[in-house]
Length: 221
Image 1 (cartoon, rainbow, N blue to C red):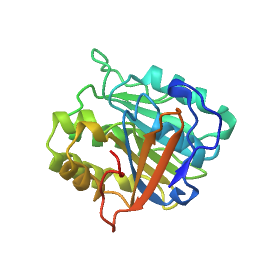
Image 2 (cartoon, helix red, strand yellow):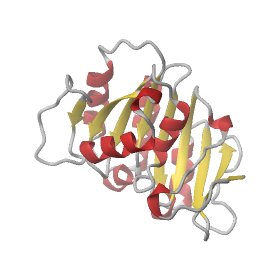
Image 3 (cartoon, rainbow, N blue to C red):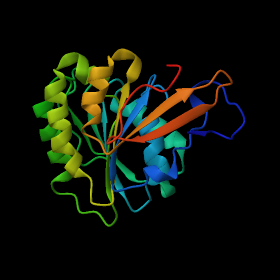
């Protein structure tokens, strides 16, 4: 288990450093208490992605605009992957903006997994990249509330292949919102599970496990 060595910073800006063994070329499930509020997936992307890379981010609890703003706040734009967004939140949005500064497709239904697949295809089908392609789903929890676990895991198996061979796929969920069976089932779609917990002093701890081992909540949870 690793803990953040940085001084305490209150709130959602407390720094998180994921284990280097997360690396790229893997699919990782991040189990945190509120993965969107603490931008867990975006932080992993900023840490491991490079400026020559491309990333597709699926947002299920915040719209595209606040997602882009949060991502931009994490690191300078010239050091992180360029962004493409699937917005599954913003109701009333039906016109995609695939040629904007941040290409965006709107599919405002967290339970419509088929529309998600189509949206991802629209964003990646014609894109030629020089580096790696990464995939981030900021929170699976709204999807798991709106669709069966089987449907969600099926779509994760389908879309995880959108990352390049050395790219990173990051799926996150709020482990406090699901039972252990659900978390274990979703974990089967990943190579590794990274538990993220916040200590009383405001620092974060990460616990990285292989999905070949038993997947359970950290001791004390």
